[in-house]
Image (cartoon, rainbow, N blue to C red; front, side):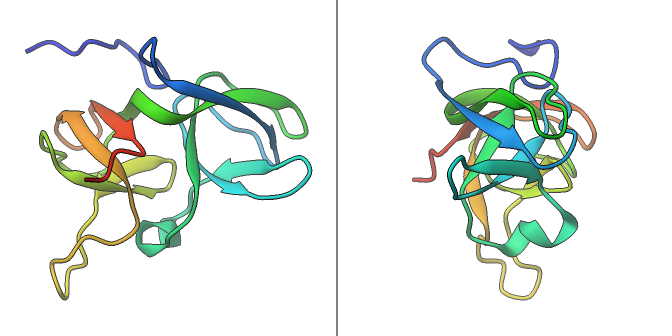
Length: 134
């Protein structure tokens, strides 16, 4: 089946959009970690974020350092996969992408940010419902 979306950062009409100030340059479609504050800020998720429990968002536009931009915080959004991501699989954030959310030692999900609604292979575009864990 062909993807509903053609580029990372595209989202469904029912997605919840919030605005955040970028603490670094963010590309459209990057999975970001949200840091609470007044205003809250975002930064591209890093390698270590795969096992963390944190609020996240996906940028719907490119956002320059210090600027404010739109992000999906709940709902369906297209992102790039880091590893094969299968339909209905739980995913975590890693280096601005999504990756299967399983600890290699236990096999249990860690750092879950959402569930895949349309899977794909490593480096391909996948669709994830951010915030839908169960």
